[in-house]
Length: 323
Image 1 (cartoon, rainbow, N blue to C red):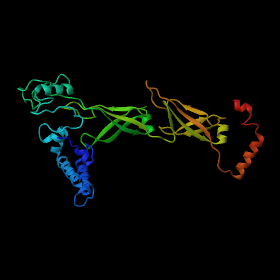
Image 2 (image 1 turned 120 degrees about the vertical axis):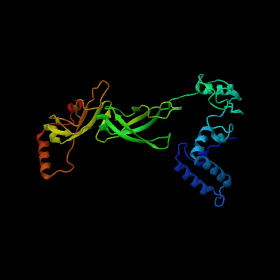
Image 3 (image 1 turned 90 degrees about the horizontal axis):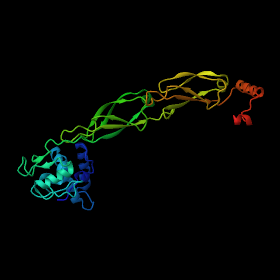
Image 4 (image 1 turned 90 degrees about the vertical axis):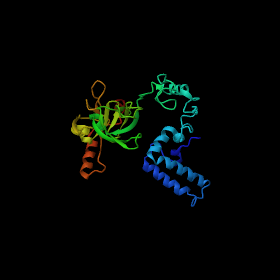
């Protein structure tokens, strides 16, 4: 018996919900019904769709199909994907039949601890009870990974977040309480122990890893542990000096703009960046940007003209370029 992939027949994933399976069947049944379809081979396709749906719509049949493939109704027969090359012999044995063949099969899959006790053991050659080391066999579940987008404020301060993710094992959704460590960077992963894929035979679940992505903020730029921003000032504030308010991920603070500040000058706020290994934090650097009015009043223009006449400063002299 050739293996038939009923999930592929219906065009759904293996973890599809019953509702998704039903919707896929109805859509395909309408498309390939022999009374209405002009598709080549529509009648055969319609029968294949019906066969797949008959199994997958029933949770019990679906569970057996997932475990045994097309041979879920009887011993031997179809080979599920990934099991090609194994000799599923007659009489309930593996690799040529009998306990020795079954033993070799489990050795290859689970290691030498899964040895057969012999055909006379509990469960016989067609069952699992006669295999030493297989009773109570357990295996931990695999790890899973998902994405977690956080704000820059969360990355700086840390905190906790409630998230809900799809659970491929059940087709449902699971909620988690996530602790976000202060100083986490994009690309780093937060580990939720025991929240990954379920184990086999009661084995413990794997871990869930959340890959962090810090949401872009047009006000800030991250460089290592330092955070960069800018502070706009007027020409007269830059020339005379002033106090200015600057935004940080933890709220606005006031800083001093020294007199004679040019565009590009950086004001360093120590310890307002991201937390580093060892507990120290990086810095926040506020870059001065001189902003001029887009239009001038008559009085403003007059004053600027007077300044231009009175000032001996020349921005494009050779000395200024060298400085």
